[in-house]
Image (tube, rainbow, N blue to C red; front, side, top):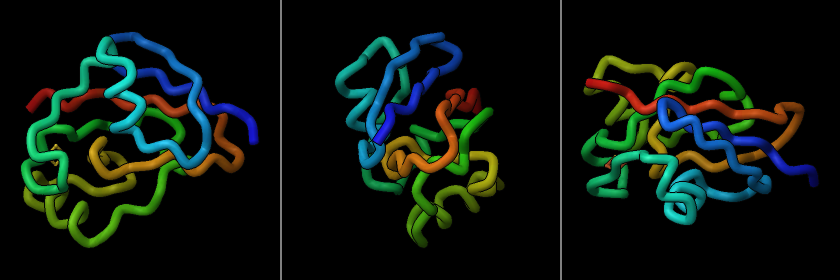
Length: 102
Ligand code: FES
């Protein structure tokens, strides 16, 4: 499978990752991605990111992620939790998550 380029905003860090990798694992290996975490378990919403590009390359949000997104008034077509989303691959070759500011 071909690599997917992930660009973290606003840090501007770009890394190549493989389908199947969790976004949280990518950010743990690349602290310069500068994504904040707290619970790491779909509870707090600290790791919310707006997906600017390539959302179709991410795993589907489960009920726990959807609950947290709903609390913040977000929907999974625009915002995801970095502690939950994984790269699936497919047609998309680039994913751009941007850390939510609120
Ligand atoms: S770190 Fe708490 S929801 Fe992701």
